[in-house]
Image 1: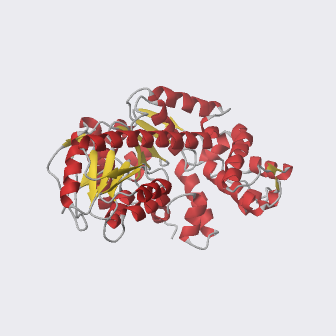
Image 2: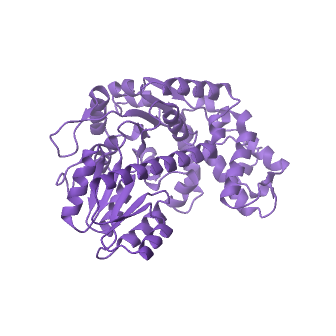
Image 3: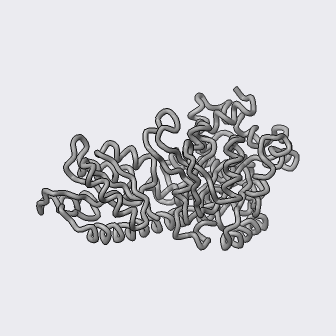
Length: 443
């Protein structure tokens, strides 16, 4: 089921097209003008846009340009009753998939939409392939622990079992979640992500399960949630350990029955979506502390996979750094540089509490600050170059994952001038960092 957006200032045409396309098995959103369409496209994952050209305010051509600026892979079909050759040529030059002349037959619309969705699927596959090529080193390893994790992930991907990815921040849980989807029979379906740390509880419930018009202040129309968007594919719940207790109960019911209700709705919906979850917290400890439901834990931990931190897979550091440097150099339009010997030694000696994410940030900093073909040790961040003669920190074996993370966050907060700067250095959302700081009393 694809999600389509129909944009027309005539209510009759919007309703007519929506009814027809819904009859073909698609989910259809509608908007009366370009500004409303942009708001829809910003809050929803839209596969194809069907828009009128002549509208008050933001017209179809302006909407096309803005959509492609925000989402370069968007597929847009323009409709008009005032067709000209010059207008059609301009639309195609601007990136429209097709230029449809009113009045048109609905069968013609259906054919164009299916062709457009095929193009959208190709673009999505190409995007996923680029992402996979951009991070192959995260899915290849000389480390026995990492190889065991990847082998388990491959086996689990072939089933519909719920998978729980465990590990510190920055170990690659998001990348592995996407890979599990790509390796699975659901790979042609959508891969939908929701971060359980970035929204207030009510908004998170709406984002996950959807809501109906009038369910709460600001709910001015029905809105399907991420679960419905993931139908036939995979829903990735990032940082599920942060899920509020009330939503834990609702998620548990979905996992047991595949049923749920939108916020404010009495109707029960059924959705076929696989759940992959991830957390950097010790969920068993959270269960013992009463902060996480034990029944939900057992439901999501059908297959648990722990990704080892970078300090436990040092044999991967040289190739990982080389790969990341290649990706970063391409992004910054620079030739691939090489690390000098002191820089390589510093990378190998540092414990990398922020894992692969911290390594990528350190290498990007070094690349930006090194104009030549060689990255010197002096261009690496100060923590990586800290004197080695200081008293050693407690070994990783003596600390919990959460304590390691807490110490690293505390260190980054202390050396940052603002919360936003610290969040950027850690590679997380400022809201997530605020919550962690509050939970650990680091104010």
